[in-house]
Length: 115
Image (cartoon, rainbow, N blue to C red; front, side, top):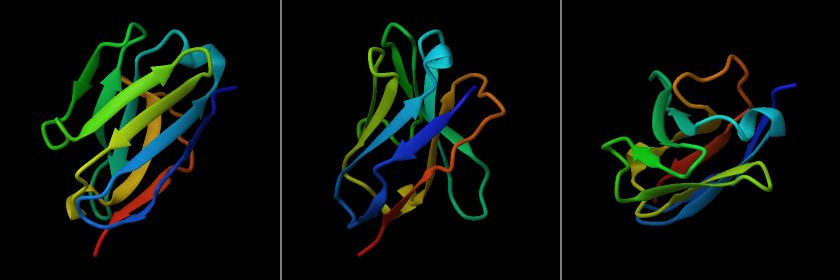
């Protein structure tokens, strides 16, 4: 069964940091490129970062230099370290396989950047 469980979101001031985690089904995690997506109110879901099984990473222009994606294959866990957060980073963050995602989406974790 495919399952993604995101955690680590919260309310943070501009310039602050958060670290998101995603526990994924082992069967799908180990063999796939994984990604972090986000969806802001009134906007489409977008892919912000992805990582190959070997650790090669790619980032959207809007987060490059501020976000770092990583994975722990032994723990079937995906991470997103977010620094220098901006109000425009406010969104629900999801993890899934990348390019393309599966049809299974977790509940996501809310990140709110506000003073």
